[in-house]
Amino acid sequence: MKRSIIIDTDPGQDDALAILLALAASEVLDVRGIVAVAGNVPLTLTQLNARRLCDLAGRNDVPVYGGCSRPMMRDLITAENVHGRTGLDGYHWPEIKTPLQDRHGVDYLIETLLAADEGAITLATLGPLTNLAMALVKSPDCARGIGEIVMMGGGFFTGGNTTPAAEFNILVDPHAAHVVFTSGLPLTLMPLDVTHKALATPPRIARIAALGNEAGKACAKLLSFFNRHDVEKYGSEGAPLHDPCVIAYLLKPELFRGKDVYVEIETSSSLTLGMTVMDWWGVTGKAPNCTVMNQIDADGYFDLLSDHLARLP
Ligand code: BDR
Ligand code: CA
Image (cartoon, rainbow, N blue to C red; front, side, top):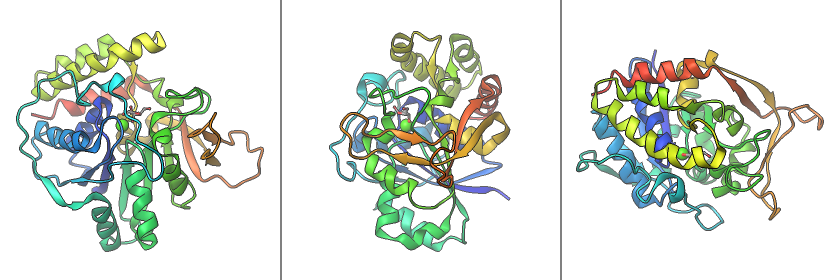
């Protein structure tokens, strides 16, 4: 049986590859809907970008919703310095065909989760957790429809990428992250500790460029754009390819290794706001609330990605 997933996202070049990977795996993943959130760029752009990716995958049938335009409490922080003005700079996008659904993304989440069998839906979150937290706050009962939440966010041993302590997705909306991490729902986290071991190096990008389809060409261009910022920032061979880790885990969990730990989100300190504080060594005695990944078979990850992108138009 296919796994039903909802993708919550702020595309973003790495979100783009994650969405395309999920849509390419249609024999095992049923992408029920995509909900956009403000993050890498404002919501007006992330909802457009989510629709562009459905077009590129030849999947105009996937419903795309607009969610929250700002975090629960803080002002929105965006990342045009990384992703470009549109969020998906690097590729010349044709006119959009996939429509934007009328319903608000948070209401879509609530209604879909309430109507689902218990634990039937997996949530794949690739951006700030605002939509999911708002759904859990507005309708606590909707939690019963969620089987698992797999998220990209946070970092512990790697430190932060937006402040010394905080990773972008969690820093944008730490209060939403707090709601999700205290929800008691099954959580799996792909933090920077794992994504910084999954680098989009030039040979890996060249392999995607050579797939011979439009999706491969587009992904290679997006990744080349994405690389320019991170290669300089980290002095690495390529940018960490964060968000597709979430989908790769759903397709092939054996690519990843991690540990069940207790994770708490810092919501008040001005110095470490948005930090994912992980009790890696069990020093608090608190019960683990999250499976945190810290190892990846990076070659296997890029094999999975290339093999799936090759199936797209
Ligand atoms: C995360 O922040 C965004 O810029 C990326 O899309 C990814 O979700 C990495 O910190
Ligand atoms: Ca993202």
